[in-house]
Image (cartoon, rainbow, N blue to C red; front, side):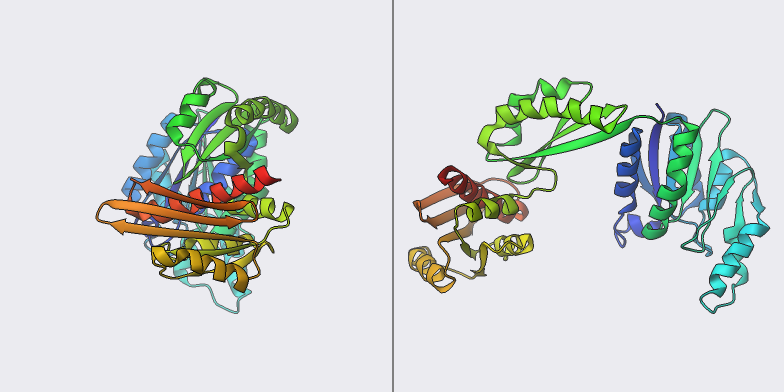
Length: 385
């Protein structure tokens, strides 16, 4: 099975002016083909550094996919850099120039001389026509069986060429018959260290593999399986998933695209309950997340300063105002390095008040508070059901 790397090219990426979405799309595509991705990196628009990164990557992996730097301007050096990396010259492709000129002509414009740069490819490269843009892509095959695949940086163009041309090419060249599938389980109410202690033996498995990722009050347990078919991969995942679910119990609230707010609102709806929220010090984070879930069980909320002694009255008034059977109040109080979260929950099942202390980075305190508040509400709604 071949291994792969991704190299995104563009100084705008290094400067943080443009968000790199290409790496994620390519990585997921490779995963679907059963190709192991070993490394991703970004380099600026410098021919020397691009060539060096390409040479190093091709020594480690059979497949390298690059994006960006294929435009017509002086600061688009990818073509020359890749030619340097494999030790060949650039050569002009008249047929590519005709395609480029025709595409530009559709916009009612006359191609400029500098746009001819896009018709130059490393000698021996396999040209890939770009039906949705002016920058052709190309593939350079190495004597060692490697494939250097160069795609445009514009996401829509890159995605089209990757799916329509590159995927079939890789399947044929490397006889790809395996798939990699991933199942992500979401856990709340337990820290990453506690979860690791409970599933650590599963993290040593070779196939499926199991890994953890923490997100300020929520921890993801990722199960990835490689198999000859999707059904076989699903079977491998199902066995481990069942084990994880048994160990996590009620702490596991969802999988894949499930969110804590969505699961919580669905649990409320099953009870016939509706929710209003009152928050203080969270910058509207609780209300925003619940609103994005787009569930009718959420009756809206308010974000304002509420003195501790007035929280009880404010909660009852909000419940009456929004005709909500459940009111969740969350207040974040910061005093020096001390960060306290006060959770006040009124439901048909009763009243619950909690005080939590957060010791992490202040920037993450609000998200941690929201996750803990929603988790507490979720548990009450599910237990009541």
